[in-house]
Image (tube, rainbow, N blue to C red):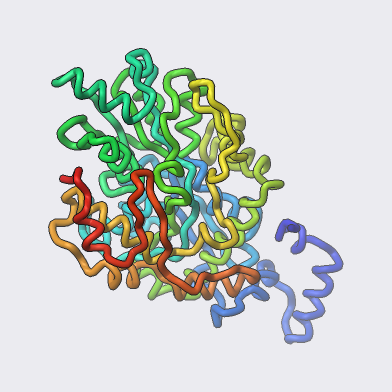
Length: 419
């Protein structure tokens, strides 16, 4: 695929556009090239500049690539990535209007929608930014005690009654908390009574483990690989081994923003979706690693990002493999589509862990938050995007339990280990 900036700067292409502009009775202005991509939006974006918050993680890639590689210009907008220090900061800047949209934890969006983990506000998700690509990292201190997996951790906890074990996630309603809780519970470990759980911003995970503040953590890449690179920990399990092709980060915003700027919401989603498609191509992964490793974004060594981005895994215990379900940004549209069942799953886990006191109307809320209409319009603008007909999908998680979104209330109440 050619870089959109190359198309814009190509002399013959520009002469063609100038002729087209003349035929329309006007001169070619800067940014006119993207206007040919409005498509299903029905009009130009209401806002020309869009600030999108992000956390320094590999899965911010679609947002960063959209800005760096010029996909935003293709759709008549300028994306300004805004680097944030924590998920709480991402939430606050989104809600107070400092940022228009955000690379954000799936479960955080639903937490805000339900008034859990912060002020309640109607929210919107227009696409998923990635599937897979997180990990649960354990400290070398646990390895020295013979613990390399969940079963070993359970044995140690049962043996050392009263011995405190601390595990970190990144936000109480977020994806990493849910993966960590699910993994612990699948091994008969209560995340609230058998261990202590704390919240640490993603870029601070490695430093906190280095000084002994926790025994393990769940976070997105590259901070799992970084622990191995720095020889302070190892990967016990990847999140794709907890739930293959699980949902992770999304492009989120307030519902009010989508109502005020509908054309901008479509253009922004199209730009990020187009960028996700480009970034997912195997031949572009090395360039993606160089882009996002920059100090303006993730600020780490390219090698720390590139390996797992290329599906090349090393768990720090001597095992190396090519992961068939490493981080995916597009995956023929499967990773980008905002499946209603994905949003519903986070609510079932919030109910399981006592964050929600009553069962909500799972499907109705997912239909409200996951803006399939905006996604479909954006997909039409990009072109060549396969949109699933079914809005629910079925998956079997690590404990053999199937989630398909058909009976969320029964599913939420079915777990032996819960709050």
